[in-house]
Length: 173
Image (cartoon, rainbow, N blue to C red):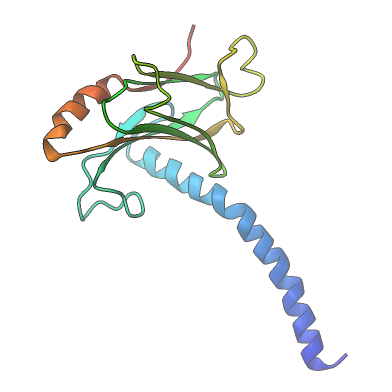
């Protein structure tokens, strides 16, 4: 085998496994970094963190929209199912749940919500027995993102009141 062919085969033998490892590991690393950032901010698992209004200096999320109010929860099902609650606003609102590999496995928006708001239970397959409406989480940890449209600056006073009714909490009953 000539030198160029050996180099090419060697490059392929190294590149393919390196590429596959990166594609597999990157989503887990992204979620680990998000969870680690929340822990550093003093936010534990199964608690909602409400982000302040987005400004030009806000960059905890890549290109955050100034037209949205963000709240986030790192869920952990190790000790049992987790209940998500949110009041229904008069404007666009969504709850999105992401597994520990960044897969989006659940979305609920304001058009699908009941008039009195949303109540969603996240559970593993084994925890969901006896919880007929539980959303099955493909991983025991992940992130839930709450998003709400902010139509005007003065709407923040309404949003602060709505946020009081939001929860991401373990089910203890």
